[in-house]
Amino acid sequence: MTSKFSVNGVLVVNKPAGISSNKCLQIAKRLLNADKAGHTGSLDPLACGVLPLCFGEATKVAQYLLDSDKTYRTVVQLGVKTVSGDRDGAVVATKEVPEFSPEQILAVLEEFKGTITQQPSIYSALKQNGVPLYKLARAGKEIIPKFRDIQIHALELLRWERPELELRVRCSKGSYIRTLAEDIGEKLGTGAHLSFLQREEAGPFSLENSLTLEELESAVIAGEGLPPNVLLPIDLPLQHLPALQLNQVETRRLQQGQLVLLAAPVEDGIKRVYFDSAFIGVGEVKSGNELSAKRLLSYSTTF
View 1 (cartoon, rainbow, N blue to C red):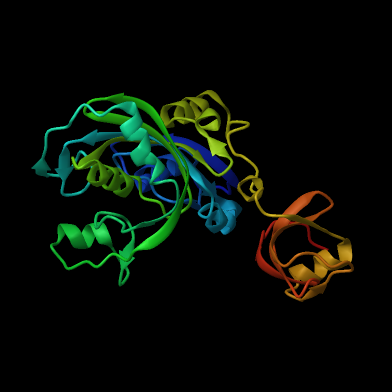
View 2: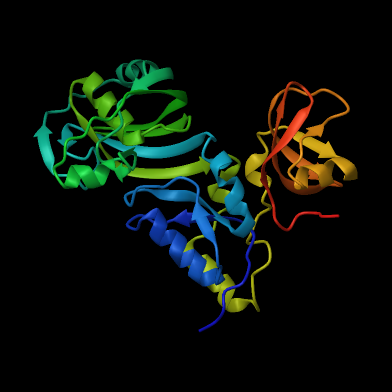
């Protein structure tokens, strides 16, 4: 058996429909012969598109990518409600779909922009007492999903051909597109379910800088060892966080687990931390000048 080696960085996979995010992760992990990996927010088996995978030291910053906005392209089929809110679920109700005008559709979509309240599907990956809701639902257990506020930054009508709406949605973390589809169907009075879902963007990553599993496999086979330009820098998912440059003394103190008193005050909050242009991890500033470590890379600069 080939021994695993240390792989550090972010790989953006264009996940195919029909497999779970974890299955996609395991395939990529095997292809790269990596010893440590994790994904940054699952996509349903139905969904395809951008799935950032973190390898090695990049797993330490994965949680910060979970907070990023996402963009989806989706097809909503009106007139058919399913138990799961997507095409894989059993049909529970059908209704004739009127020939809505584009203006009528746009007026309804306008109501879902901005801050809205969602009740996530019982078939989501959210957990209740540590168990994913979809597992409880399939087992016939009682589920009480909590309402949550989310942000729909943009909701664009790409196509309306009865009974299908094709939409592009840019939204905050915690948004459920299948729930959005069902709610739009309710507002139109027809019911609806999700028939297609593709994630086009997740934070700074897009389909343009993603690889299919087939492309990744071909690159591995063609190269000798790890293909160049496959793994992206660990700090790339963190570009939404302010950067903070430290000197040698401050870096040493931070890596020793000590509180660093900054010479000049900065705004409180989570920061990307660097020494001499090298990313060393994530820290938090409090009281304007008190920096403490949150997650530091184990192979970063030491003294």
